[in-house]
Length: 304
Image (cartoon, rainbow, N blue to C red; front, top):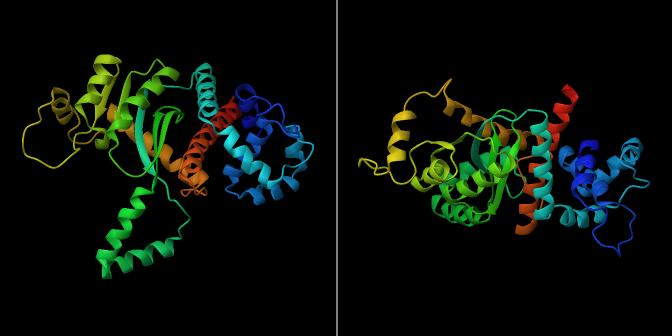
């Protein structure tokens, strides 16, 4: 919570509007929202937790605990794209000063649940799907269009998230490769190699990385329909040769670090979203990216 308050103090203005009541600053409210994500609480739940922990409020200068509707309104103010971008920029800058960043990044995406589902409920759904496949496929196509998706560019050494993209609905991962790589390079220009799975397999992505940005790209071949025809792209043919067989103890083996970060976010912050609208779901995913980086910063500082 204190780490979040310090980060937000560098990136956020004190107040969103000069005509607001000025009872709380945006960095204070942001710290409360980060604590809410970390504890997987509701707005009312985190207010009750803060009421029971006056020492936490004192550390960030809170004279009283904000109401749950105040935190709900603050969520929209502190998760704007410009604010999230500045916090990711600063977290990457702090990690660079500590010499924690490496030269390889992994790119991967993951799907989020739109609501909480118990494991028993999922098992029952799969059992019923075997009996009625037609109606199940129709339901799946509707849910796929509303599924939140988060794509990440992750530093393989420190697990810091350097770039992210959020959207609603499934689809090809390949269009996310170029913007993720460009955003990651803007925060960490010393990147030498980018690693991605077959979902990002594209000749265009190799050309952008290798010829335009000067970054070695290692992307598994396998996107599209299975075919016995020889590959026409020189880069994809090279990937077919270089990435054949086991990649243990090889550079491409570090791609699993991106999957590790997705697992960390789901285990530490939850695998389902609590927001209901598309806009707030995207902002909730962005907030979790920032919270993950804050947790890493706190861990690094505790080791120093």
